[in-house]
Image (tube, rainbow, N blue to C red; front, side, top):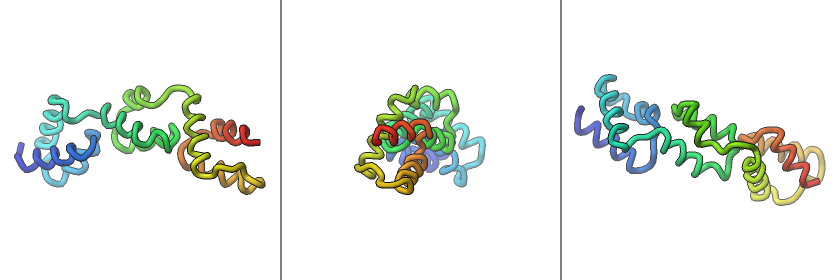
Length: 143
């Protein structure tokens, strides 16, 4: 394992958490498959690389702004396994409703004046990854 590759991996990990798949993509052009696999295995063994820690950091950073569907998508895109995703995402929609209500309040603050405005608010929340039943509950509270 080359020192340059290890140093680059450590520099990337010093900035923020990375998933194994994400770090492999970033380092893939600079190493052959076996060398890269050995480096990633070593980083996991020493605790410097952890998909679970990456997932927890992503949910902590984005959880207040996005719904579970968006967080799940971002975690899958980062190469995190379903088992870890289920463990780090908040269970139930009670927290989801609170987060959706807060996102709505920061973005809009006042109820929609007409159906078009209501549809626009619903699309915004849906784009943030909130489920339609959660969006209905939040917008229904405003009526």
